[in-house]
Image (cartoon, rainbow, N blue to C red):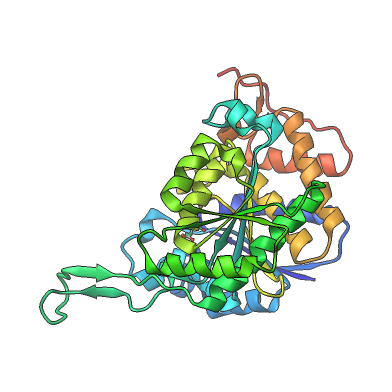
Length: 376
Ligand code: IPM
Ligand code: MG
């Protein structure tokens, strides 16, 4: 097994170091190789996704990715911005299915901005289509009102587009995921909520029609359709009515951030982006947080939990994945918290201490830290 390690920018290096440390104590045989990606790759090689990095990702069995982006690259031409690295990896590796679970850990019910009773026990899976939609639609660009003179464009445009096979494959992924989740909970086929904007957009009327057709293969799974504006509202009104949510690239980007925040902290949530053979890229749902980079305070748990998803989905090591997830719960139960999930009465720790605590839990050692209980 070969894992490509791409820490990226901002807090990426700090959180990745903890995930690699955790993987290292699992007693599994794998090789890891790191490469630059994002802004740091642009600085070193003039491109956010250098060929060497892309080739490493292609050759590996799985990719563990940190985060990319920094305001200092905002003035670069779009093709050189750090974000293009993750978009390029998704496209070149064919990673079309993005799993973004939003799980409210029992220990963190009070870290949510919603009332505890609305989020206690929350367990939603957002499945975002990742290689189509307006993100990759052609044509796109800028033009002047008069014969294409630049600079001083008067108009800009991006094209929203989905093909039938693209919708069919993500719909199959969603129905199968709903079934699997339901059987894990001893229930029927589960429920899929397909989110669209069929009342306005042709692309999403088509989306709705194709999802409805694919549903015929899954009579045991309940399918409902929801407009995206209503979905945004239902997520904060009564999120527990949702089980699996499937949607396009753009709506999924927005709704997954919203759903993540219901759980108290985006710093807790892992994600997986899979191709049709279950090869995947695993990354925390949060970004590079340049404002706290280098301070040793970022929450490494989303990246550590992403490595658990990697073991489960791509490397066929479900027991190791379970062990990591249990260790994270043990650390939370012991009261350890990074700043983003800290609350009165819990113990504030830094990035490295959090990683060390997960390692201790995995090794069956007592979870201790050198930090005193913070009062404010
Ligand atoms: C995400 C991010 C990316 C996206 C950016 C960094 C390109 O917001 O993974 O959700 O929009 O997909
Ligand atoms: Mg996003």
